[in-house]
Length: 195
Image 1 (cartoon, helix red, strand yellow):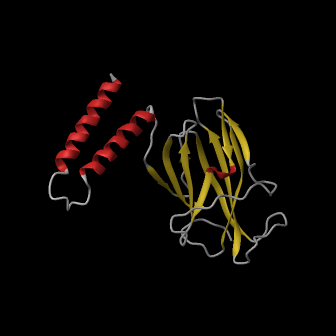
Image 2 (cartoon, helix red, strand yellow):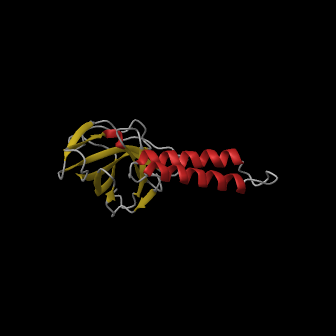
Image 3 (cartoon, one colour):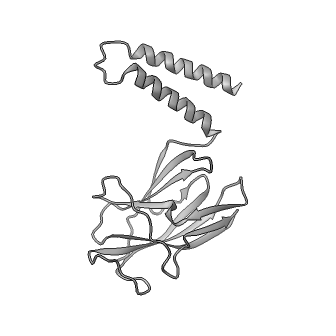
């Protein structure tokens, strides 16, 4: 029944796309591109198996990032020039230390695996590019790889190296499932930074 609905949806979208694309071709999108996009949408919907995808959820620093796998709370954000005797290589840069609590809310497995590069950071001047956190070097920093059991949480620091005068700082996380399916993207504005 589900397959029939997907095929019907695909045919409906394909027909609508073909008819709406008829004309002199000056509208910008060709019928082939429209049909290709429709096929990709149907294919992604079929792969989703009921999982959410394709949304960008924007959050304030005080919000809880509620992903499919975990809830993440930023407890504090601090810009510092030195951590445990380490300093950035460039004197115009500082460490951004985000203290976070990550709670496993995923119902399908007993534990979730986490990695240092699950989160990314961007700011004005990177033109949409992102940087990963530093690998573990500090005492309170989250490990490079760790697990969190169901209904348990872990608190620690995620540390980035950023320009001291960076503006419009955003923490990003994208849901990636074991089968390489990409879910939603979460973007948290980091605005309350202690200096």
